Structure formats: C-alpha cells, structure tokens
Length: 195
Length: 205
Length: 196
Image (cartoon, rainbow over all chains, first blue to last red; front, top):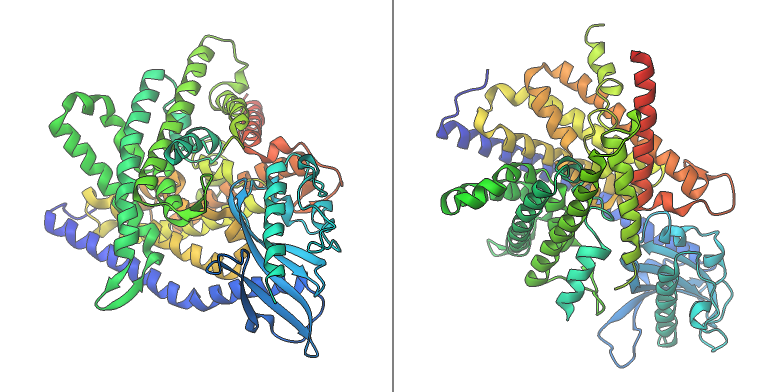
C-alpha cells in the first residue's frame, strides 16, 4: 500500500507534510489572533469591573504605571483608574507575587480613593488546582475578608495570623495565603505611590 | 547556591512524575524491575538534557529572531518544531551511541525509542521556555544553563521515583494481591501512596 | 450497522483509560474536577478525530520509514489548532489545562490509534474510531474528575453541594493515582462478572 521508502520519496513527503502542517497552523493563528487578544482584554475588563465601584469611563485607556518601590522606578505596576462623572471612584492595581506555591501569580486589587480595599480578583495563578486555587472563589472567607480593610493607614497588618498578622489563612494553603498577602502588600505600596 | 535550589526543587518538590504527572506511561510501564528502571532513567537524563539544550536555542534564536530584516515571533510553531526536534534528536543519540559505545547502547538502546513519546521530555522543554521561575530570588525566565540543569534534575527526579517504585513492585510480586487489584490497579494505588510521601517535600524551597 | 461497531469498541472494549491504560499523564493531571476532565477529553477527541481522518487519507502516499514523523507532524498541527481555538473561545479552561494541551501531541492514544488503526482503514472508519475512542476517553476522564471533585471538594460539575471542605487529598496528586486505581478495580470487577 505505502509507496517505496527511497530517500527522494521520504524527503519529499516529509517536507510536504511539514509545509502543509505549518501552512494550516499559520492560517489558524492568523484567524484566532484577534479573538485571543479580545479574550485577554475581556478578562482584564471583567476583573476591573469586579474590583472597583461602578464607573462610566474606560479604565483600560486610563492606565498609570506606578512603581511599588519608589526607589526603583523602573519596575512599575499597572494601575487602572475608574472614574464616574469625571471623579475618581477607585483604582484597580495589578499586582504580581513570586511567592506562590506554584510560582508567580497575579491579582487585581481595587482600592477606593481613601485606601480601603473594595474587592480583589485573581487574574492568573499556577497554584495547585482545587487547593491553592481556592483564591479564585470570590465567595470564600479568605477573599471577602479583605473587603473594607484599609491597607494604607496602618490599621491592618498584612500577614496571616500564623505570622502575627490580621489575615486568616486558607486551611491547608498557608503558602498561597502568604503569597496573597505579599501581593496585597505590593498593591498597597503601589497605591501609596500613585499621587 | 541557586543551582542547588534548582536541583532540589526539580528532583523532590516538583517531582516530574509524582507531582507534575509527566512521564506516567514509562513510570508504570518499565517499573517492574529495578535494573530496567535504572537504565530508563539514565537514558532519560541524557535525552532531557540534550533536548532542552536544543529546544532552548531554537526557541530563543530561531523562533524569536530577526529574519530578513524583520523582527519575527513565530512561537506558534513551538509544539510542531519541538516534537520534531526531539524525535530527530532521540534517533541521532541512538545512532551515535551505537557507533561509539556499544556497551552503553546495549544497556540504554531499547529505551530510547520509548523516550520520544515520553511527555516529560516535551513537557520540560515547553515549561522552561514558557514559565518564569523564582528559585528564591526574583522571578525570571531561565537562562540556558539553568534550563538544562533544571530539566536534567527533573529527569533525576523521574529516576528517584521510578527506582523507588520498582523496588516496591518487586516486593509486590511476592505478595498475595486480590484478583481484581492485580497489575495496574495495585501499581496505581502504590504510586498514590508514594505521591503522598513526596507531598512532604512541598514548601521546603 | 457494521461500521457502528468501531464506534462502540472504543467506548467499552477498547476503553483507552481502563482497558488499554494509555494516555495516563493527562488522565491523572487534568481530572481535578469533572469539567476539567471533560474539557481535556473533548480537546483530545477533537485532535484524535481530525488526525485519524487525515492520516488515513495520507497513509497511501507516506513511505513506511518516515511514517511516524509524518504522523507526529499532522498531530502536532491539529494540537496547535485546538490550542488556539481554546485560547480564543474558552480562555478559562485553556488556562486550567495549561501545558497539557500542547502535550496532547505525545498522548500515546493519538499516535497509537494512527499507527494501529487509521493507516489501515478508510476515512469514515477512522473517524468513527476517533469518535469512539474519544468518547471512551472523555467518559473516563469525566468519571475520574467527578469522583475526585465530589470527594475532594464536595461539589459536582462546579456546583457545590456542601459548604465544608472535602478531603483535599483527592484533588491533589496522590488522589489522582488512588481514584484511578480503585476505579480500575471496579471496572475489572464488572467486566469479570460479565465474562463469567
């Protein structure tokens, strides 16, 4: 059934198959490129909407690049500004920690203008599915306990209770909880450096 | 120091079989005897080191590079290119080994064809070029040396897991296992207990 | 009707997970919940059907000695396509499954069916075989995912039915091995009874 395995045939067929495959992949890449971009942007927009009070501007167009550490202005975090009727109603701070269980993870922290946390949302993480991943459950106590806490006036110690802080860790996910605190701390520092 | 952390992370904490679920097929397939398990792991260390070396260079100097005066990023070809390169590499290793060291070839030869479809090889190659690692410091993409050390250490982790596992299975041959548990089921359950033990390493780095 | 048997064989008699014990990596890694298992099964099924059809079409013109590399290229192309489509339309699932989507390339089920079935059968039969094996794989993954989710997280298909925590070990690595092992025991028992 199959044709002879001469060197010429082998090279020819393999080259043709590779060319055909690459062409197909390139076409699909071109077709799905925009939907992929949209899906990614959609995710950011959804996260912003979730973490700040209702707004009527487009925060994705009003991005500030603010450093977490004022002495190192090169490394900045993205801050999305939400406004209603021209007045600032909240800041959505994107914050990445490296201390996660499975590596880095990124969260979006919404602050009201006076430094209270409005809501938080996880953008991407590589924590153990099901366990550390509890941070993605917006209803869990760990996530909701942040809401309304003021992180910039010094009333809250951003650390899990095990480390002498004010935050209840997720059962059996101390490392993830600590990493979340780390990301919150970074976000708070960014917020302090906004103006 | 950083390399020590990389090695400990790869061998124990992120054990390729027991916590990342890569290379399960050979883990279950060639773990009946310690000697074959050892041969397989040795071949895997060799191939994974080489494969990561080559795919890392391809990723950073071929797929992302300036071609014809234009900056191009054709990483969408990643999967196809990597698997082809790995398949070709394994064949080459086989041919070269046969010529220069027939004794080693006899020991490792039969395992080499199996390695192409060992997802640990492609998995490690993809992980090191797409994921950021911190290893106690700032997160960064791994450089060439770190990538190769990381994936070779992953292969060593495979070795540790499969040799321990083979030891248990040799013991199991002698014991009286209920009929419906014989074979794969009891092996999986044993692997589960081994994975439970390896969870103890989590969080040490 | 005779063609229909190719479809059924893949689901029960040649079930890729419980009988052939192939494709263990995604089976264990992605079944942390029923939905994830189902998503992985569906992605694999899409690749399997497409690659089976194309390979059965190409088989007559592929020289024997380079058939494996050719199959791998075809499979890798479809995997990349599936990867893009999922990234665009099911971004959340794409992220959860992560590296295991490109790794469908080295899933022994896909290459195994190409080598053992598709290159000797017609396009239609190969497609049916792909669907059958694909469904068998998806059912197996969904079952494992469901058991792990129910025990580990007290939820089914992402609907939580009890507010407390489950036995977390089942959504972690060891649980994957244990659940698959015991499900295989049950599968063997049922099959053994039928044969007796």
